[in-house]
Image (tube, rainbow, N blue to C red; front, side):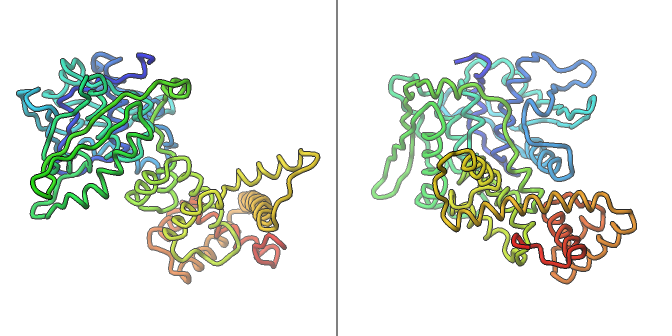
Length: 428
């Protein structure tokens, strides 16, 4: 494995026990990449007293606008504000107990037109992070492919046992694993049930590790009567293949789909759940398809979350516009193209014409005199009030934030009808 793709993480920081707040999947991923960067820098900058890195080298997908910066700030805030207890997952391996935040401070600064992030570690954690005596060797590509906090946490806690002859992790009461995998504290007075934890968190985390990582993990349960009391994991190293070798080189963590979801008004928690279930590529494709639907002439989507879920569940049947257009071009180049069904052909035609209409109208609106633009925006405000759009969306229009895909689509339809006297139809 390329040494630049390995992260040596102290064993005392593997089993993170959140006491306040919660740790997000993206936050834990970014934290590992930032740790690698800090090690390469060796010491903090003399002037700032902090480590730093261009943002794109840690997380990609942030373009500097309001929505994407909201996701970034939320991610960094979770690292600074959550009080964490650090301990080794192996009994007796560390005699120390530590409590602090993942970061003691963080800031974002634009340098020569590019966003940079700056961060610092708490004094009781800094030395251990930068010069660990005992550590687990993590693979950067696996960290970047993680779909959930639970999957990433389980991977980090199990990977160090891949070269141990027995392959067995330490044994702990199953309740010990609940905050470690979920990334948030257990509420006081809340009753925990192993069956629910296993179904909703543990089994999914195991399946994820087995899918995305260089190790395979199997659960071992110990019972007292019929009740499970403690659990441990059996860890084995997967055979290294040519495909896995190619995947080892991995760049920054991707936040493209989460940023796009935020721009479209999808709550962060729901966006991350969809990311975890379907993966970044499928989720991003569904968001692109959803954005197209919001610009079309048909009736407004009444339940956006339900519609997005339908696209995701339909999978291949709900291809993105780019995929459909590519399919058409490929067919045109064939001498004897395979026949498309009437439904497929209609989808392609609507995708091509809908995209063309939107681009045409956007150019026309951009060329309008300021007075006409203001009148068009006034009509947009009236329409959104009549359709009872959320206060958040209407506030965006009031403050002049018109780049949102939903707002652009409505604005395009209003202008189209005013100038053509016809509905926004693929057949017009």
